[in-house]
Length: 76
Image 1 (cartoon, rainbow, N blue to C red):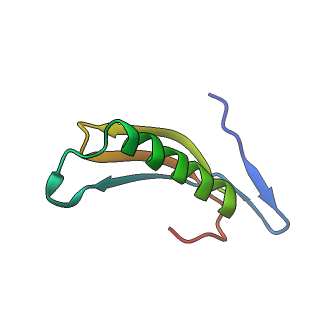
Image 2 (cartoon, rainbow, N blue to C red):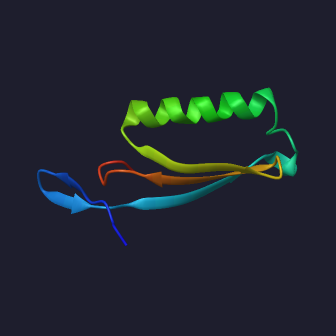
Image 3 (tube, helix red, strand yellow):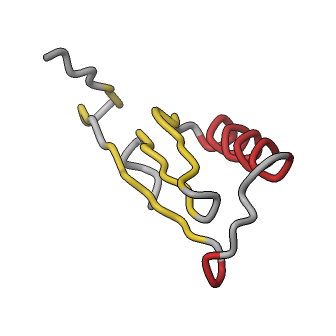
């Protein structure tokens, strides 16, 4: 299995986070145009702050799973 390591001047890292967000009252609103806008917004935020989204999936229109790789200088 190949694991990609990233380097900073004082460290070598491979930090991955599995984040799950749910909608209030589990309302099924993450579909159609809302889903597209949410995904694009998350990718824009990732590029702005310097982390990558390895995988993103909307589950049952009421929650989202993200697999994020971030440098140690960013707080979750």
